[in-house]
Length: 350
Image (cartoon, rainbow, N blue to C red):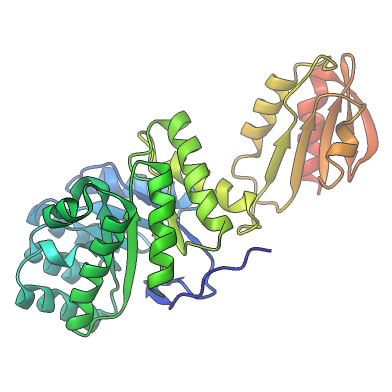
């Protein structure tokens, strides 16, 4: 059982972040928010995949105004991502967003920061301070000699202090780098210095294959150490894939129990069925199935059932045949070409 760091709790719409709240999975639309129909379609696809919170870039006032229709068209928290212009933040707040992502130090003078903080406070909207190694302040880069973990933490705490000075405390922090080790060390340092809830992730992680690996290592390490209250897997591709990876990371660490857990063996010289094809087909067929069970697809009857003894149901392959087993006990013998259908029928009846 992983013991999580104690952080204060904030609310993002109907989602609690921090404290003992479940770790929330986030993503960001890659649609133009001014294209309301496309943005709503993507947000709904993200929700179906299990997304808890969605962020949208807000580059101008037209995008900020589009948020009114977008937030009215969905029943999950929307986050506005704002840079440099406090007026965009104020307009986004007026138009129904549930959280603001800014860096207080770059949206204007102190009086403008106060305006934004007061507007958020009046509507119960938290602010996420988002520090990125690619956009650190010049003085910190000079002081620390580059975007090292200490510089990332110093930037985050500087921005948090600005909000604290204007008496705003519903704050979440993220400090992301595309370097996995730098990201891990930065969050470790930050977790020692604040009780604010932390949004974790490896920024610009890459395409689906490489980005998944980097994110699993970075996010998984932090979560295993009890660090992190919400996460985003940043991938170059369909944002729905970010949700799939994020939820699987949570499942692997026991933070998420709902849905199906799928395991399969790597194959070896004893494998006498098309295990790779069968495993891929079963995994595909399991998508979206609303059952809390563990399913295993194993390559041989020698070790298969025993290795997957804690699975609720699974397959163990033989020569042109397969055994369907439950809790490690073989219950049926099925021809190879009928294995997938037979397994799915058993699962449907569970």
